[in-house]
Image 1 (tube, helix red, strand yellow):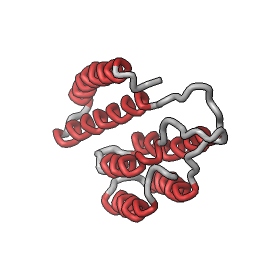
Image 2 (cartoon, rainbow, N blue to C red):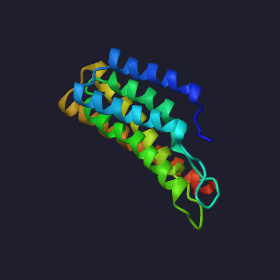
Image 3 (cartoon, helix red, strand yellow):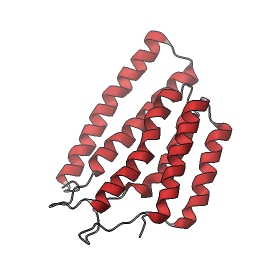
Image 4 (cartoon, rainbow, N blue to C red):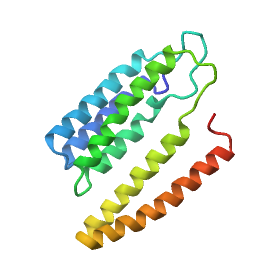
Length: 173
């Protein structure tokens, strides 16, 4: 059983096409992002969600592929999208690797990566917000750095508070 149904693949390809059509990515990061997403999409039908010991792994990142591609589309519309796109492109590849390792490697105690994903996603959203503010206001130099530092302070408090809340709720083993 995969965490993402096969019928979800065509909409994923549409979002990927929109990223090419309306995005501002340079050809190299756009091509690598496309190859990474296509690898994850091709892996979906064959993904095994059972470990060799018969237990179900605790987390599957493949179900996050639609959100990943929507954020890639948002990143591609940012004023300078390439650096963030390079990092974001690694996530589908890491999702496939995590699924392969999670379904093959037996573990004594299940581990969740929910807290890490929480932090990564909110940091990316806040970086996009900073790029949107700086780009729409035409900020450069010191002004841009001040906005970035202000949002970084807010992001640090927000993400640390969220992680603490997740830990108290027992969502991470």
